[in-house]
Length: 258
Image (tube, rainbow, N blue to C red; front, side, top):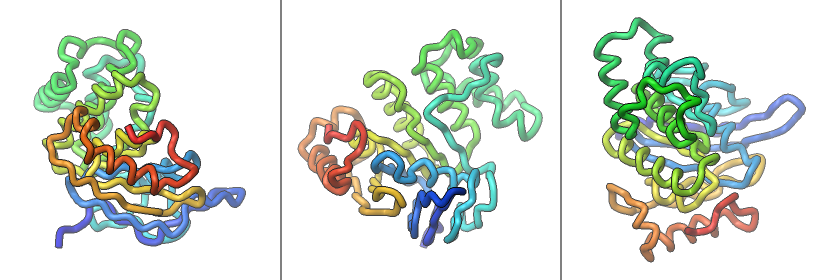
């Protein structure tokens, strides 16, 4: 049996002041699997990613990445937030190379790989541009390229496209799909948008309201490679409706079936 890339058993999280963000949460993500997390605001989705990333400890339960207990941040886990968090005084190329620079000296091979990723994300010609010279969508693509530059076996994305317009979001989804379908990394995406979760994922995890735990798992048996046109199919709409019903009356922000 293949070892899980991510495994949580009975994980809970209480913050100072008694706020219980998660309770008795079980989750397993296989290598190469794309899993989306949906749920009402405040249900612990972002906390879940931070616990997996080792940025905050769980209050109970066990968290493992590639079979090893998570005791702090790990080089084989990459995390991307809603805001791209690029260094404004560094160029696109320099920002993409940051994960390497903090570990060791940059080589010519590193530069070639960073340029390959920038080209993959349609940023060729902007490698020497600064964040202030790029659009919001372009900055997010630089951040995605930086995430891929880590070579992490586990990629965590916390609503990375929530602040961009719908057309830009669709473009970014396509870029992320294209990269994911070429790699064996496990990806966990937190999103408020049901259609995005269905389009991207092999499974959608629906969380309860706080304290968050797994309310339902919805398999997404759509063929890959995926495309936005799939959203118009009856099967896609049925899957989106299944997720919407699992969310219950609290729903998800921006969570209509299509």
